[in-house]
Length: 353
Image 1 (spheres, rainbow, N blue to C red):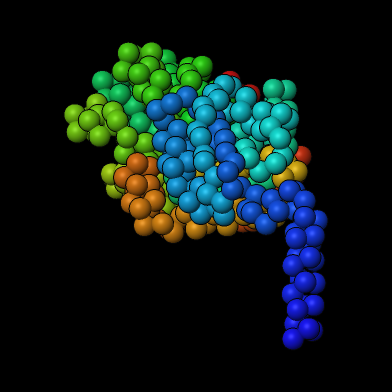
Image 2: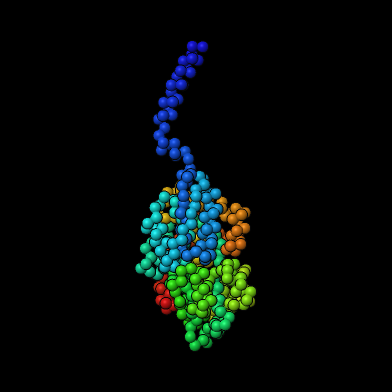
């Protein structure tokens, strides 16, 4: 009885002392890092386009699958076709795992050709993951003289393509196709978003659009298709898009045999069509936090409600995606090219400009 009493006295004295030795920082470590925090998801375009729509969709769902369930806010940071926000992510954003960027998928090409405004190495970003595959197409106003590749070749003046900048997706694709199929393009750059380009086409400032096939799911495209406002001139290939008219020819079908080297080059320059919606964190994010973001991204892609919304908003098929590690390797292998290939890319973009 005396022994039990002594044990009780011992524990009642020791336990409070032990608990008092646990610092507030040690107690905080038992909580998930993201508990009570806010992640900023930067969107590299103005509001309204597919990148903005997809980014805001991710912002609504991702926090659900990150331990601690952080709040996620979407913030648009357009400029220079996506380079402004990419530079911010690499040079200014803190590498604490609280900033993610919805990257313009073709921006790495501007690094490859040495654009002076690019102040980052895309290979050093920490890639979180991507979803969707979005092959490219060229479509022109039906009332323009550019309703086929043959008409583009024969036209007295080159077709005007509305685009964001020299590193934009539309610029790269239209330049490549013009080189492979031997027609002229006039690039009308400076638009801040996909919707602004659409308005430019409506106003007659541009004749054509080079864009992803998933553009068809958002306004005004369903109406345009119904009214026959635009003509589908050509699509990327080699496989045909599941959403475009099957009568639309592919670049591979129309390219002459002598264009095989250029088609191989197109595979490098259009590698981004395999990772339509890429997301990245700054270089230097602690490995464990990066893995949390990558794991959460993967789990989000399996959410039935996310899949349903993504299908409706950006026509995602629910299967095509890359996890963070796969995307990291894809970016590295794509950007790291021999000098001869880099020169070819520079020549194409210089001639197009």
